[in-house]
Length: 119
Length: 111
Image (cartoon, rainbow over all chains, first blue to last red; front, side, top):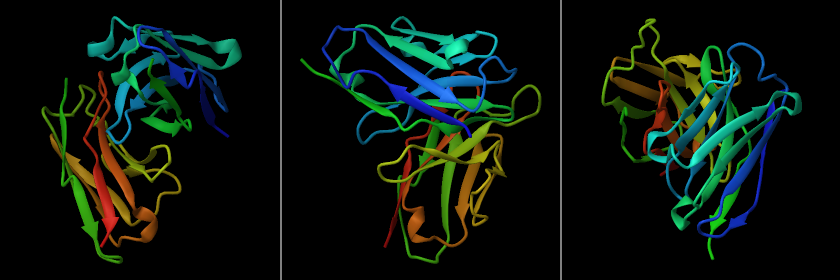
């Protein structure tokens, strides 16, 4: 059974760095074709893909946030970590992690974690 | 980046009636290998998104057969043959070439 769960702080201050962890089960990120992405959704707004890490450690980022994002994986712990620097109130959103596998993307999603940026 | 444009953004539907959502991309989604990576997601109120359709027309396991996807190139459609109460939510299309982009979402409600 594939599951993903996001964890991290519910509240961060402006300018701080956000660290989110996606802990997953039911698959291995060392298996060819497996990928994990982070996607966010501001309250009442649409989904926005942020970053992806692949089984071979290839990494991809949304262009507009490229300088603020870092994605990494710990295969032994079944975790993917996203860090986002210089947080601002506009970054307030629910952050999801989602799996991609052959043949399609985002077949499984976590429950999401709401991050509020406020002083 | 590829821009995904959905219409309508709001879709009131009577129970038992069909519904259709359009999704247009700013450029062709046909990949170099011949595949077209266009997915549809459903997000019920208070829930995480759930994938319904992948690669234009492939229904995910457990998705009722009243949902169908079609299209090619830059024009795609999600159809619900007979809307049920559990279909209320927001529907998103998404293109699957880097960088991934989603449509604005279509909110389906019952009249």
